[in-house]
Length: 593
Image (cartoon, rainbow, N blue to C red; front, side):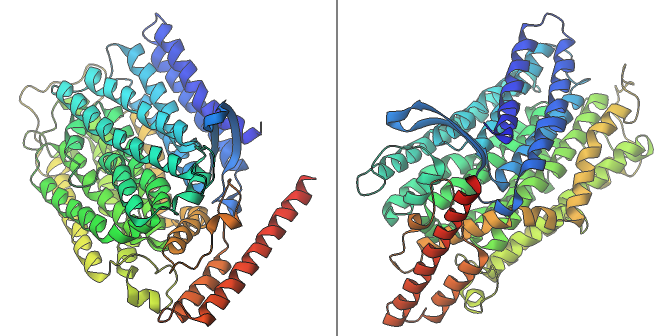
């Protein structure tokens, strides 16, 4: 077992051991201390070690792989590893761990062992989702995130927590059952004699063969995938569970829900729906983009009329993640890059907003903007952070929300035949175009309006407090050192990735190019080139030069794709690619020897 694989196992197993220890402890104060020590230890030891060991030059390949056979005849394995995208999402999950534990110290006063134990279980499940290299392991971890969040909402939520927890569970569980059906069909298809010929649940292997399905088969698989992942995002019109769940969840639950759990949907679309059904996704990308734009505008308008500040931020997640799905629907380099950047950025800025609302609620026990306002005069530190995270969420240039939103809009603009024909780098994609970008862009204007309106009422103007308000017994009037320490990592991330987005974009560029190639390849005019010929089951990796050469061939012959010259050039490209692949494997063998 490699050091990297050991670090991944530690990230998955240690929180479970901590959860068991907390649950068995009779001391009510043990939960907070053990959870904080565990989450900080995972952040500063295994997570940073993985960051140090990861080879970013091979970001599209699964690294630190480790596999244990469960049922060999059925191809069932406990298989873990990570590529550049899953690494970043694991780091986000681990970063939010100590943040939510610190934020919960004064907010959770009853049943603390239960609360912190389930929080640790949720931490392990989130890491498992992104580290899974086996489809069954992914699905088990994907489903297992439901149970801890269900308990956190139902047991530790607000007044309407029972209805919120039931709605959350039923929506997400029902959708994921349909996704399971789609996954089972893919596994069955790949096991057919004319495909792989034996059972496997290895995600990379399934990706190699799944694109051989017909358009009709891919369409049904895509619908099954979206049934689970679109609910998780959530994409309009499957969003109705989210505002209630966010509003009723405890602060830590809202932060984890916005920061990580919603990203399971966008990650699932990028990681599974697109590579497994690339032809169908290309065919229906405009319809998916339309739903995302409706969500951007519709949810934004609902935010505009909210008086509950937490519900406003909850609906804003529906609007913001519409940009994320729009970038995925563009099916080009710019869109995929912007979408991945948005997954990370949204977790920082919106997570920060939910923390600010939680800190305010602990002091005033209300979220109604008609009852409380003008807090800058009494809580200047709180107001400073509140304005900061609101500006990050708006997309203020220099903060993390700006590059991700702009990239998603540009990707929709470039996802047009004219840009593709012009040879614009990264402009290949589905049939969207300027009108899609225009209507989505109105969402940025709406977001600025409702977030600035919220900041104006809650932070500025005359001080307004509930009539029965009295000072908190333990908390000071303004933020204390613990609360500031909770917010600083998120604020630093918002600034750094706003000024240096290329750090993240360069990290995922190799993986993005690979995914774009899979979609391009599946929609080439049946050239006869088999993607599985060029790669092992561990990865599908093509250099930017090779992708550019194929694009040039396609563009030169787009008016006559069946010509003899076209087939000759494709054959030469195929031969060169195979030769290059063989030389790479020979080189790797020499290194191994």
